[in-house]
Image (tube, rainbow, N blue to C red; front, side, top):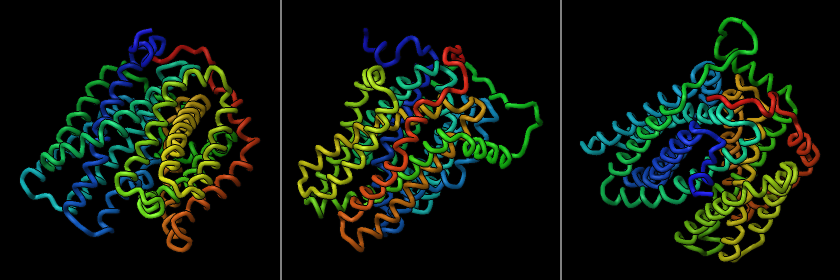
Length: 419
């Protein structure tokens, strides 16, 4: 088997390869910004509030427009929506470069650009997540999601940030210029995908208001126990995970005495664990049921929270973080695959958006709690909170996980993929 066939098996089709190439290209640009954006903001202000506001701009658009993006994605040609939203992202980046080159950029302009860019990204991510189920058979969703996640790890977490820091050293506008090129090229790549059909509504009723469509999606979610439970699990575990992650830099530099380089090594170790899972996911999917893998992943999270709370060794923390990244990748791939298999095509956008609002809502709640807990009980306090909260949640969902994994897809397993 050639490397190309291993990365994007021929059975997944030509359209999947265009989607994969577009996703990986876009992730390179986002990885560049992952390092360059904080550097740009920090070069303009020393206010902790304004620096933190840059991160808030990543979450706020999801909380404001996430549900609307899902409803709109279920109304229109999703490929076209991804192209238009990515086009807006590219234009916003070009405008930022113009401000930087002319010396007229200010912290407020940068934050405004981050917010507009984040709003467009909501529509890109929501719509793009609905394309894969329209391209491949349900039995191939696992390997398809694994390959998309691999691009995120390699381009966004590994390759992009060092390149972004290097480009920023050459000039403040360079990383954003390269990012604009990457996003624009992603539009070209995804345009090669065959035109996707507008999702059909379950009935012949006339077009309704967006808020009515959102309510329809929420009602479907609430009446579908497997998907509802999966979303609740993701929300809860994101709260417990985000509590210590929000103060990880202090935990690494002050509690573990690892310094700034050690903190960077921790995040890199997580990405390494994810890459190890990338190459093994196909084998795991063939040899273990999703029920077993889901239970193992959530159990590993509980135990690793405990290990982080107990250790005082940076070396041990690095080993734990590799395992952390490995199971997190597997869980993310499986949970996305299960949701895509169980949700009808005409509801994919709305259910995906509810899931993402839960993810970012959990991050906001968890980071807020983590800061307070660390302030009152010390830097290991958030890890103890995460351990206890995740353990209780795991006990409550242990049995329902079997129902989630065993739930039948809403459509025939052997239906031909859309092209």
